[in-house]
Length: 214
Image (spheres, rainbow, N blue to C red):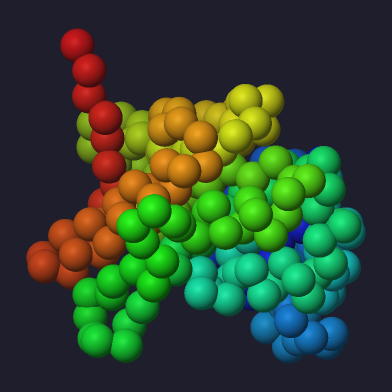
């Protein structure tokens, strides 16, 4: 499958390596053409990796991953061209973090709205799934932690899209859990704040959540 990733930071690169390792082709997209970070990453990954713009990544991808800053993700989709997302599974890994008051961050979007809902409104013809937003990039692909596979919560309005993402998560060593429709992004984005807060207190950045049931 062809994967288009918007964002050249650590999250985009980590997910890109995961998709490449599982046999997919990846185009890592940046805001501007010729982005040095994207080009260097693609060259280091081999022939199945490419670099381009947001628009090129969105057009290329059969599945699209959003890995920009959470507060800039809607703008990134506009630059990419909303028509390029139509009908596709779009995985929103972002969190609208606000660091203006220091660390740990708060959410720039909260209450009766969320970053995930804003993405879905900006891309009404896309099938948006929130996932990979509640763990650090070091554990996104095949996390190895005591106690077995950790839980990755996901949410979205399209059941088939959520099933597609669940299959990827399972192949990557996660136990996926359906958290409901896209409105549950409100809770998953808050879960990111909890992850950051608990990680920072003891400097335990290699951590993940796990749901336990009898």
